[in-house]
Length: 257
Image (cartoon, rainbow, N blue to C red; front, side, top):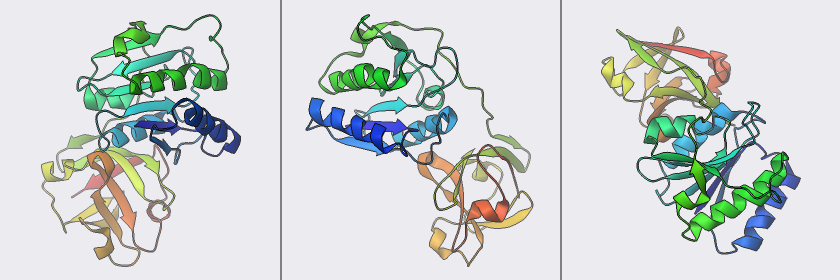
């Protein structure tokens, strides 16, 4: 299985070419595509999605992160092998940051590229380098064979959730199409500050309820539940949580008992 995480979901031509190449080179390979809610160039959200997706897919899945970053090494193709032997491939633009924090790092390697395949073009690099390497991995190619060890990979600077007495300080990681807010706060932080299911919690000064089943909430009530990857998620019935709280990705978030 190959999981493709990309910021090019709205580019139908790019996605068509991507799917066509996979179909031609590996017609029997199962391909999963995750494109939303990743905006163009949003390496942080792509990193969040990759980490959370990897928590719920088989360890044998090959994760291909296709996002066009802006740092100097953003077009350098690299591969990551985590401590528990998950495989990620992509560019050195910071998208490996959160998978590394969750699963650890065993090794990162830079892909050896022939002069005929090297290109500064994002599209050509994806088609001529990343896709063939992903397929080679699915066919049993060893991680060590892709190239030399790479030590100076780009690490994203980002805020981490912290506990301060009875308060949790975090931020919004991303907002889905339903207006639900996915945070960078591990759900088990709630237990650490002494709150449990059906307790009340203040979110940036607004009351909310902690529930395992979001359907149990009242109309327009803010509901705190466990989302993908074990992170805290804020939702609401018949309303968009992002509109109620007036929050967007990377907004600060304070949870208080």
